[in-house]
Amino acid sequence: MDRREAVKYISILLGGTMVGANAILTGCKSDDKKMQFSEDDIRFLDEVAETILPTTSTPGAKAAQVGLFMTVMVNDSYEEKDQKVFHEGIDKLNKASKDAYNKNFISASPQQRLELLVKLDAEQKDYTKNKKPEDDNHYFRMMKELTLLGYFTSEIGLTQARRYVPVPGRYEGCIPYKKGDKAFA
Image (cartoon, rainbow, N blue to C red):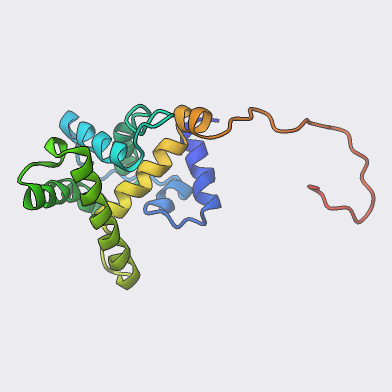
C-alpha cells in the first residue's frame, strides 16, 4: 500500500472531516494552476511541523519530511481557495511571529514558536467553532491536520512513534461458515 492509498483510508476512517478530504476520497484532480512552494516554504513548514511534533525519544516531524508532504497534499488535494488560504497562512504565521517577537518564525526560539502555535491553535478552534459553511478554513488548522497526517502515515511515524506490528495475529484462510455467522468475524 502506498502513502496516498493509506491517506485515503485514514480519511475514510476519520469520516472525511479533514480539509481536502473530498478530493482525496474522490481522487479528483483539477487542471487548475497550482500555487508553487519554494524550498524556503518547505523548510518553514518543516519547522512548523517540528514545533507541533518535536523530536523526543522518537524522530520528529522534520525527520519524516512533513513539510514536503504538506506541499504535495495542498497541491494535489486541496481546492484552489484552500490552497490560497494555506499559502497566505505561511505569511500570516510569519507576521504573527514578527508582531509577537520581532523576528520571523524560523528565527524565533523553540519556546517562542510553541507559544505562538498554542495561541494560533486556540484561535483556529474558536474560528472553526463559529465558522459558517461558506467561510474559508483556518490556515493553522490545515497545517496542523497535515502535520499529523503526514507524520503518522510516514514510515517514521508508523514504525518508530507507534507500536509497529507488521502482521497482527495470523491469517486463517479456511474457517468453516455456519448459516447465520457474520461474514467478517
